[in-house]
Image (cartoon, rainbow, N blue to C red; front, side, top):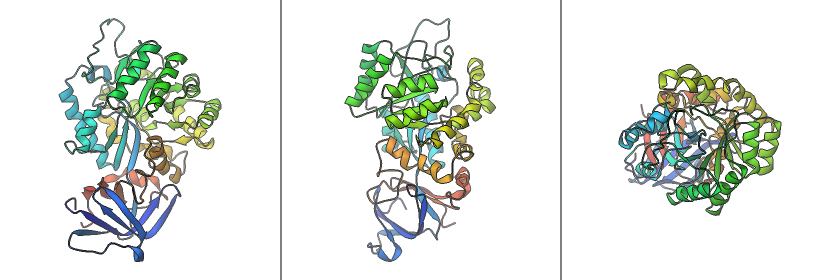
Length: 417
């Protein structure tokens, strides 16, 4: 099918995530990488000729490709400091397998939350790696001793070679932050990540710490805004989250320990919330086997049980919520478990929006991804079952995903089998 210039998908029940409903008996016309027409079956304008491939969905649900708003495609191990010591060639090879797995699960766009660069994104877009579209931010920024500082207490030296496959760069002070943001943007970063507080995978900081001064955070936001980019912020506690939101951070990652004051600030600043529940359940069960050091494993349990409560607060408060997973090492296979975890709190339509239209808005690609409409990229899934009735149908991609199309190219097709 990938050899055909034009593809027509007939008898489709299109899932419209914005409206939370199905549009039955539709025809989708695709030319090259884009959707050019979506119509009622009797109104389709494109006639069938020898160079047109027709696909019969047989009434199945056809939905936009999924978007994961928080991934680490370089994280082939949960021991991130150790990964930074590896050859970049080896890490790229492992990343290629992680990317392929994501596309196998129906994710056609991912936002990398530290590590991926223009080279990896280009390798995917040019077809050298098989995987989803990669929205990259380069290396995240961390203060000395912050969440991105992988040195153990007794280590003094810091290898600042940019080509090393580390996830972060260490910067201290307003001037250093400004320069680092400008440099990441020079390298093509589509967002800037700041470590606003402590985290699990770092060896020496506390989860309840705040990191970077308010002046440093504002400097990063100012530089990103000047380049029409935005800042995403890693934070768990109310204090760390609220400092970031007040300073203009556009999306907050994790946020397991927020309270109602954070919800109000999300609404006030029209910011996005990206919970990553899947990774905590995974780390609690598989972290040590996947390479998570003991000092990090102990910290998992400080945030594990709070995530659902934070999601419930944000959902009830009308915050814009985006799908994210943050998985590491051999745990990437659990990427779709986020659907089942969120289903304990949210209805299916809201979860689907978080992985389509809301995520597309955050990425600045509303109308281009996360929807099936003229002018959108031809990223779509043909599904056995209706995710609006049971969103967990998506957690069984081998059975449920009958067709996966990314940019007009078919990655999987079992409709005829």
